[in-house]
Length: 108
Image (cartoon, rainbow, N blue to C red; front, side):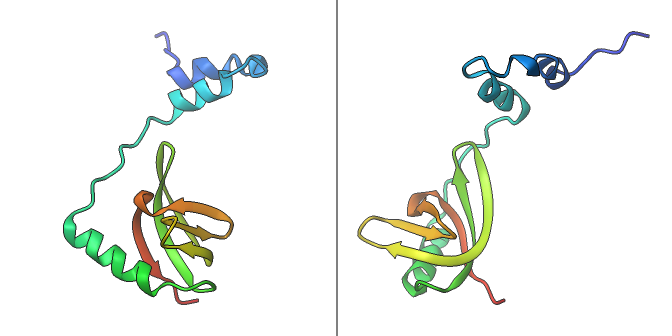
């Protein structure tokens, strides 16, 4: 019985060619399909806005946000928050408000 390689296994054969421009990005795109960004309900948006209004620099939070292709979870201290710019920074990662799916205060 002949074993067929998955697309990822076949792509890994060509890793020595990773110096080719864009090859690694293409390989990652094949390996991890894009996750669609969720539309939040009105209740979720209101809850998120309430938490955003109460967050201060130095507070520890757990945040789930959309990062290019997928949702990512981050736990850390808030470095900066700007209602005017609509951004929040946690542990040096700048996250636009519109990319936030969940935001909770985190008790250490």
